[in-house]
Amino acid sequence: MTVVIETERLRLDELTAGRDEAFVLELLNEPGFLENIGDRGVRDLAGARGYILDGPQASYGKHGFGLWRVTEKAGGTPVGMCGLLKRDGLDDPDVGYAFLARLSGRGYASEAAQATLDYGRRKLGLGRIVAITAPGNAASIRVLEKIGLAAAGMITLPGRDDESAYFVSEG
Image 1 (cartoon, one colour):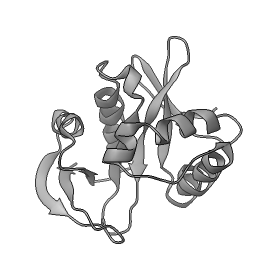
Image 2 (cartoon, one colour):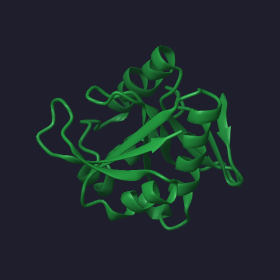
Image 3 (cartoon, one colour):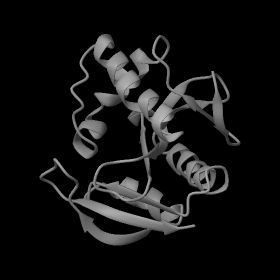
């Protein structure tokens, strides 16, 4: 386990095949994930393994960052994913996150997203970091505003029909 970021309550480390399939399968099929982020077509452990290998792990190798597993320090329970992504249609890396609904309201998204933003600026030297979210995802918008990102209009990413709310942060 390679710990990338550590906060007071959380550890963010690389998602790995062979350890995280069941967690990823559960998270990617949560109603909130499907509604606000989208259906990734992951329906079984093999699909979760493919998601990990082709998504986060490929991004670690290509960009030096990606989505990381967020784990509670106390007890070691995986609670979500958070990290930096390089998406087609965005010039800058964006902060992304998703957390298990049963653990909502604990401030994990804000804590992990803030730590990720700080890591991107301090450790990776990124100047501008952006974010996108579904326009109706009030909880995600609150997190982005809390960590200092400002609304900058709407954007449609390549291959998508729907618009996303676009947020920016200058480092």
